[in-house]
Image (cartoon, rainbow, N blue to C red; front, side, top):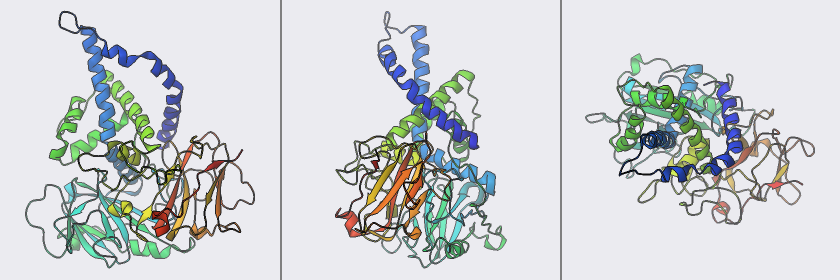
Length: 499
C-alpha cells in the first residue's frame, strides 16, 4: 500500500459525491423489498440478487467491525516495510512527525515512538518502561490492555508511565498472550492482551522545538524482550522515522479483505468474536483456510469496502445520535470524539458509530485520553465544518479565534488534516500545526487568531496553509486542560469563513 493508495482514496471519495444522487433515485431498497414470492417461493433470479446483496452487506458491516484492526494493521505493515520487523524495533520520530508520513491524525507537536509486538511469535513480552515516559499499550483492536488483577487497589488499562501505575518512575511491564496458561512470575506489572498483536505507543513532550534530544533520550531507554530471554534478546533498534516517509494508512478498497485475512490467519480466536467471524466466514475468510474469492465475490468485496469507507466518514463528521453531549458546547461546532470512555462502551451496548468515526481518522485509545481531570491528560475538540456548518475547503480563507487564557496547563496546538485520509495536511509548511512552543502572537486583548487558507492574510504568522481543491478538518488539542475548559467559562470560537 504505497502513495498510490493515498491518491486512490481521494479519487474514490470524490466519486461518491458524483454518484450519490443517482443511487438515491434508483429505488434499490424498494426493489429488494418487493421481490415477489410466486407460489411460496422466490425466483432463481431473485435468489441470486438477494445472495449478492447479502454478500455486499456482509462486506460493508465486516469492514466497519474490523476498522480498528485495519487501521492498526495498515500502520504495522507500513512501518515494518520501511523500518523492519520485530519486538526490538521501535521507530521514533526524532525530528517530529511531518506530513510526509501518511498516518491518521498524527500529532506534530510531540515526539512519537510506535512499535508492534507479536505475542504469538515471541510469547510473553517484557517492556522495560524508563522513568519519565508517557505511553499507551493497546491490543490490535485498539482496546487498552488491562492489568491482570489489581495494582495498588485498581485495575489499570492502557496508560503507562506518567499516567500509569508506575507514575513516571519506570517499571517492568509483562504482557501475556490471550491464551497464556499458568501463573505469571512475580516482579512485574502484569497485563494480558486480548490479541497477539500489541501496539507500543510512546509520546514525549518538549518545551522548545529546537531541543528535542531529551524526550528522544527517554524513549531510547526502552527495552523490549521475550520473558526469560533478556540475556539473548535482539538489541533494540530506534530508527529515526522522521527521516523516511512511510505509508501507514489502511486500505479503502477490496484490499482490506486481504488484510483482514492476514489478521484472521495469525490471530487468537476470541470467543466474543464468533458471530462476526461467521460474517467473515461467509465471505471466505476462515482461520486455517485459504482465502480465494472468485471474481464475482472479489468485485462485491471491493464495492462493499468502498461503501463502508464512505459510511465511516459520515460517522466522523459529527457525533452519533446515541452520544449525549456529543458537541463540547451546545452553541459550537466542536465535536467530542469520546463518548465518556476510551472503550466506546455504554452500559448495555457499544458505541459502534462513535468508535468507527474515531478510528476512521485516528488511532490508539486509553483512559487518560477520555478522562475528565483538571491538568491531566488531553482534550481533542475537532471540527470538519465552519460556523455555518459548511465543510472546510482548502481554497477558502477562514479564521479561528481563541479567547485569552487558553486553558492548557502544558500546551495547546491547532492542526490541519486531510479530510479523506486523516493524515497531516501536506501543505508545504514544515508541520501542519501551530502550538504554544511556536509562540504565536496574540492580539492586544489577549485573544489569539489562527488563519487558514491558501495564502497568508498578512505576515505569515498564525497561518496554516491549505490546498485548493482539498477538504480538511481541524483538531484543537489542549494538553493538561484546566478547569475553565471543563466548566466552559472558556470556549473557542467556531472557524469562520472570511468573505
